[in-house]
Every structure is written in C-alpha cells, then in structure tokens.
Image (cartoon, rainbow over all chains, first blue to last red; front, side, top):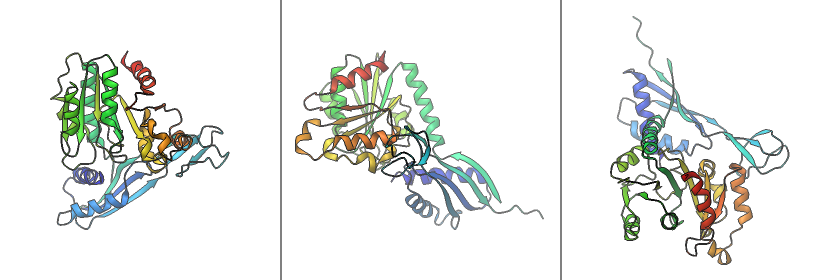
Length: 114
Length: 212
C-alpha cells in the first residue's frame, strides 16, 4: 500500500526532469527485495495520472533479482524464497543486491527543431 | 527522446532522514526504529526495555489512528509523542521530523520510534534512526522471514517475543532461525517474553553496547 506514496514521488521526479516537456514514458528499476510491488505501483501511477498531462504515458520497469553470496562456498546466486545455494546447498547467504528502486529515465516528446 | 534521470525515488525521504539523523546525533540520542506486525508486542517491548534500562528516554508512537499506545506509555510515566498517519501504512522521515519538534529531549539518551504495525511497508523508509529492529512473535508463525524477507534483511537485530507461548503453538524455532540466517547471516536474534521477562537481559546487554 506504500506504493501510493511512492507513485506520487515517481511523478514528482519525472515532472521535474521533464522541465515542461510532454512525458511519453517512465522507466523504473525495481529490485526484487525493494518491498515495492510493480503491479501495485503501476496501478497507482495510472490512477494518479488519469486526467493529467501525464495521461497515456507508458510505465515500464526493469527487475533486479535479489542476489546473494553463499556464506559457505562464496559463489553468487539469485535468491529464491527458500534461499538455498545452488552450488553447495548451504542455506546462509550474504545479501548483495535487490533493494534498488529508482527512476532510471523518462521518455519525452522530441523538441521541435523547426 | 530519452532523458536519463537515475534518481532514487526515496531520495527526498533519505534527505530528510539525514537531517533527522544529524539532529539526533547532536542531541546525543540513540534512535531505534522498531518494526513489527500488528500485535507482536512493540509497545510491551518498549515498556520492558525502558523500565529495565536506567537511562532517560523518549518515545514516538506511529499508528494509523488512536492514541492507545501513547496513553499506555504515559500511564507508566513514559513521555511519548503520537503520530497518526491517517491511513498511511508506514512512517516516513518527514512525519518523524515533525514529531521530533514535539519531543522534550532533556538528558534523553534513547529514543524509540514505534513504526506502524506492518511487515512490508516500513522496510524501505529511512527515518534517521541508528538501529532498525524487527520484532516477531511466536503466534505469528515461523514462516515470517520466508514470507516477508525484505524487512528481515534490513534489521540490525531481531527479537522474538512471546516465547512463553511456545508450548501452546506450533512454532519451529529452527525453521524460523534458518529463514532469518538465509537472508541476514550475522544478525543477532533475541528470544524474549515481555510477559515473564525471560530473555530481556540478553537484549539489554546488546543494547547497552550502543549506549556507551
């Protein structure tokens, strides 16, 4: 549910970066362990932008898988719910990445060169 | 045309959290962000901790509505400031900043911030605290680290409350600890009962290290 306040922040940042240009798309990076549900976030983004100059903008995201380093064999692996190292079967790992949540870029209408 | 932004969505929250952190550092206060599901015993843990520790303290209580927890603390002579989030499922740095203006610090050495009862939404929001503590409780079940891994990865200590209920509940401690260790290898886990006082001393010993 915190995605509502996050959606508001995404819109604020996008509008600031667009400096008045029409926004056609917003591209986000969302880590698997960021506590952000993309489905819920996009629902709020669409709801909040309906009837505004952002209506019709395309929202997309790139997922960052949660990565861990095995505490036993040292190999890196993508974390699943049970978190078992696929190399040695150990069940302990050091968190490496997956909490990312940022606005990577926006798509704006090309500026009129004429 | 693509415009690169590379902006952390929580940047503004983090900026305010930094302000809170330096303000609290200046006051010489150890600040704890206590996160748990509803009913895990956050207020009980705060009460137990603060009545055991012999240092001046303050509490900020975060709830969607009501002042029930603040009233409980005040009835025990503990100074508490209530934040009502009015529907928001977590505290953010700006809510805490406003609450800090109402806290009477005096010689206060420790500030507890009791977050809104929720194992999901509080996790990504830095409030300006020194320590993020996650509280679990036996009746919630041993699967919480598996179902809500994010909050367990950010915790600097984990406390399991209500261990006096172990004989009555199917809670597999080994499974719970394995779930925590999988994602947060070195985090200390304290097993306590706020009801009987069992295990509180171990938690106190750990906490006192941060107070010196």
